[in-house]
Image (cartoon, rainbow, N blue to C red; front, side):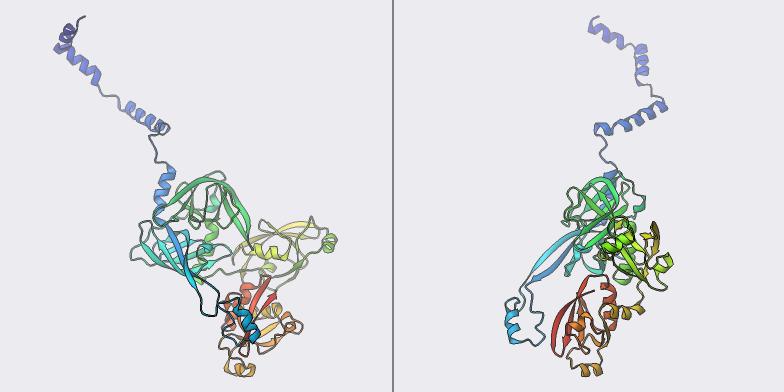
Length: 481
């Protein structure tokens, strides 16, 4: 049929109306809905849907992720004995090692991330190692606003710290999740803000939970392990579940991690955060036991399974240990998920807990393995003086005008030794009553309260460095505890 003839037929009024009716009749509503549902299902496969759950979680949380920089001075050490009179021989000796003309210094920045956990109070959670160099701490939000931050509290044993910034407007805060509800294999998102103007994002899955890692002289308990890459820049930032909820704080504390990330579970962090906000530090757990190492002969006599364990040689009255059923003569084989082979292992394992935590202990008693749950408590301050005499062999008093006169010291702060146990380490090294304790490790001692606080804090250490003063001369002594 020729084209002009076909055109004339198509333009016939009756036929034209019938064709239009067939072509443009609306589809049934149910069929249209079905087509839309099918399209929604297959669209992601063709790349039409790029905004997935990860993108939505990152968009939701990003405003609460901050950059943290700590500006601090690095300097050549000045002579720590400069305030004391020195023997000319020692004076020339120390001059070779210390700058006598003043300290040369320069500024250095350490970078990390953090996350806002309370927008009203301006509280930020991060890693303790991010701010370990004390200096001016600057927090930068994603919108590039800068704030000078104050340290509310820090706990190196858990690698957590809380900062505070002041803002006229309420800050965006992250939604807390439940780290006890984590599933092996579920998707997680690690976010950081290492540069102060944009976030870095890595994704992965939960590889394991309740991991214990040993870094330097500490054991970190109950970490989340993930294959989401975590580097120093996003250390301190949040680990999220797919709903954008905070389930952990990323940490790059473990230098040997290759392709492995670790995060501190948020449920564990909550207890530490509470202590840091209330006290500025974590209240260390007290169990109330005295322990000693188990040698090979004792291990054989007790028929212990394998090597290791520590002996409970005494249990303090009215202590958490008594309430949990721990007895003198018990052998502690494990604390939490950490095997115990020495008193040092025990002390390191206990650093992973805070006062009030319930700690599961594996006990060997009468040839059987049992487990006991100990609810730890804060160390009673009334026992600090007794503990000081046990550990150091000293009794002390505040530095009053009267005992300053009797000790002939020029010190204006510190505690004076009033009693010294014979044959104690301090006595054998020449320390005597009247000497003044000025410092223990990094803690300055101004009065008895400071001294007792230091004793409680360092009671689990293998040794402490003490600065003493006699007359107008000072000297350091390292004491094994």
